[in-house]
Image (tube, rainbow, N blue to C red; front, side, top):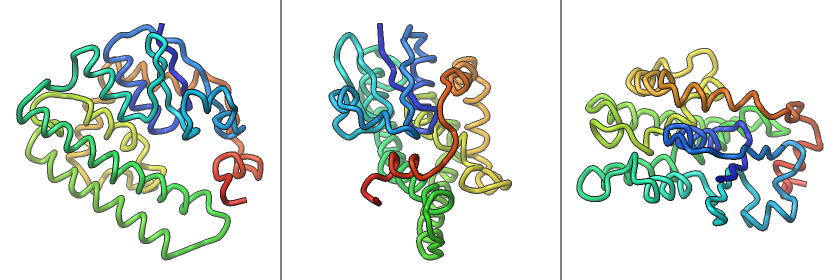
Length: 223
């Protein structure tokens, strides 16, 4: 049985989608990051970096959402071409999301919603980079239905993880400026596996209030 250490935030949602697409049975293990459970020694033994998601697959822990996507694709033989241009494209776009869209989105969320002081430069810097990455992704999706080409795969699941919640960064405009990204996200969201993955957000009962305890749990180096 797979153990899936989960919080309903964008990076774990990528893995939730992949698990549901593969129809793999798994045990959902909630990790209340607002309460600091990601810092517990037992969790740090699985992921020394103290972040969700983590997958324990047949006794083997795998951490980082994109590592998990690659692990599942390679071990189950689905959603990633095994060679050639399609695999190269998938890996390229997967890594663009891993090194670009994901971290810049996370920093934008931090400075827009969680920073204890208003820092206009930081907001402009990270929001601008999120917008730039969506422009790159939108241009790609103007040419093909999915990031690696005609086939839906793990790069698209990685995009869905963040883009499905883009309104938390962009507000009411959401993905309106990126119609091709919006089309792809809507296509994925309509899949039965995506419906099941999104429903996982409501299963665990977790802390939602953002207070000083939560700030210390999420940003311990900030005191």
